[in-house]
Length: 220
Image (cartoon, one colour):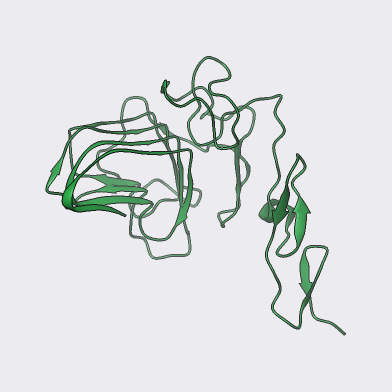
């Protein structure tokens, strides 16, 4: 949540993030704002939570100047994928998808260059910790708008690969190593090699359980 009680908040950039959230992904309210930019993020709500909240909520403000909401993935964001109560900015080139049924509404509604489509993640089961890299053929590939100040993605790989920016925090590159995740491998504990050059921490077991091959096992 971003609030500006004593003075206007401005020149804020939120980019290349993964938000797994319950209520709102990014909320901007209470105060005056301008030059707020939200782009190339992934917003994913918890399917098991009550249907309220939004990926991006810009509301209850005193004044709102120029802002942008571009190139974001809004996944399973019930009950609305966004609530933006201002017309002073640009909202476009986002992808919205609900894995468990038809998409709910948003304010503003679907824009000219936005998509309602399965982003085709490397791994996604509706829970936390999905592998949000894009698979070959994803509709999010080359579907964003170019942002000159954004030179790399969440992994530090260059943007854009094919001359046009992808939607979301990861830029697809057929030649790049795609790391796995704990959830993808079914691990709930221990250290796991990600298949590229890093090691993942998959959590710890509650004693007396011990971690064996990524699973919590009760001794004896």
